[in-house]
Image (cartoon, rainbow, N blue to C red):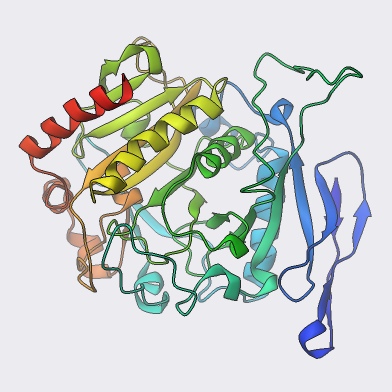
Length: 414
């Protein structure tokens, strides 16, 4: 394990470097790596392989038994959380966030409402988005403009080992090929300076690639891998498309800890494509589609997810994606288990311009059942029915949704 010592800024104009020092205190996944970006900042690497994946995940019952005992956290959790807290203590965020007033709304959905007034007031103004396929614009805010101190670390997946004849060694039954070095090599984990919840970070492919906010299979696989690296059942990853309340048109995922169980982790579904575990989410206020994976097919499931999102982009349909530990929907007798991952995709009405709901925006969190609320009045008066009415006003009509369901099944089974 590598422990970070306080760093200092060496003055030098455009060539300034950020010096970080470490003490080796045992085995671990953190290393120093010099990065050419961000004015020569020295960055940490978080190195991992499939052997670090935690399968199956722990149940919420076990999580509650641990209470304040953090031994269930993984090396990844400890690395991310300790650095996130350090950056919060240094004042690198737009507002302090340690804990949020939280309540569970009465009803069958168990919506998790959290009062987060500062985010509504002090977050960066969302960009003016006019199209789901809008091109990247270097003149607008983008992640090439962030401060070096906002980087948590780089994610580096260890390549498969090879024997002398060049053949790959499959080190475990769960082996997943490494991310291609030609596209999203060494993506960054960066703090979200306007956090929704504890540990809120962004997963960003090399910012210099200048990719628009259209999901790629490499980034989906990174999101899935980060879930498997975490020992916390409440670590979630998600994506907002343009028109789906993405505020920055520069490719990124969100990751954060919500220490509350969500109904979506165990909600019933209808199996649409048995061979690829493609489901229709129903008996839920926000109907959608989802893939289930047991963690052994991350590359193929990532590609299938993007076959769906690419289809939506081509049809100019806004969408949100939510990745979470969840139970196997085909094993109805174990609702409490969290043996795999559910990746939920919602097709929804596009929202362009500055229009926002007073209580909350309907994006990846809200569709999944997590409600970051902007003001105390709405926080105190929200009901399950009022939330469902707001959420459904942003979804496709029943007719549109049914047509899309048929089209996606045909598209995925070609």
